[in-house]
Image (cartoon, rainbow, N blue to C red; front, side, top):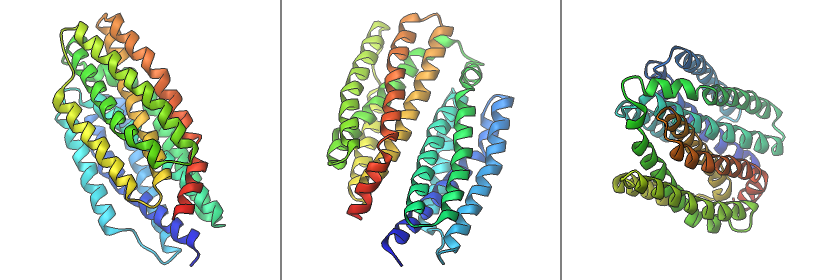
Length: 316
C-alpha cells in the first residue's frame, strides 16, 4: 500500500470517530434546543450524520480497513460529555448552538482535508463522498449561524438579559485564555508553513481581546473567572502537546484552530445580542470589535490548509 493511501485510511478513521461523536450530540440536541425550528434542524442533521457514518465506513471497507474502536469510543464518550455540559448550564440552548457551530466547522475542515488527500491518492470515490458530506456540514453550520436570535431568546426565556452579561464576558475571557495557550505554541508547531504566520498574527489580536474583556468586566465591577480561565488554558496547553505528538501536526492544528475560531464567533454572537437586549451598548461594542477579527482569522487559517497538508505529508 502506498504511503498516501495509508494516510487516507488514517483520515477516514478520524472522520468516522468524529461522526460517532457527532451522533452522540445530535441524538440529544433536539430536546435541548429550546426552539422548535432549531430542534428541527438538529433532527434533520442527525439523519444526515447517520448517513455520513455509513458512507465513511463503506470507504474504509473499500481499503479492507475498519473504524478504530478506541477512537470511536472516545468520540462517543466526549459527545455525551458535551451534552451533559450543555444541560448543566442555565443557557443550555446558547451553549448547545455555540458548540455545535464550532463542531460543524471542525467536520467541514476534516472533510475538506479528506478530499484533498483522496485526490492526491487518485481516489475519486472518496473525494466525492468527502465533498458530499462537507456540503451538508457547511449547510448545517449556516443554519445554526442564522439562528442566533432564536438561541439567544431560548436562553433568556427564564432570565433577564442583564443577568447573563458578566457570565458571557467571563466565558469569552476563558475562551481567549484557551486560545492564548494554544497560540503560545502554535507558531512553533507549524514552523515553516504559512499557518505559523497566521497564528502568530492572531496571537497578538487574542491578547488584545483578553484586555478588552478584562476592562469591560472591571467596568461592571466584575472580573474573569479564575476557574474557567485555568480550565480552558490547561485545555489549550494540553491540545498543544497533543498536536506536537502527532506526525501530521500542521494540518491537524489548522483544523482545530479553525474550529476554535468558530467557537469564539458563536460566543461573541450570543454576547452582542444579549448585550443589546440588556441595553448594554458598551459590551455590545466590545463584542462587535472582536467578532470581525475572529472571522478574519478563521478565513486566514482556512487559506493555509493546502500548505499545512503538504507539510504534514512530508513529515509523515
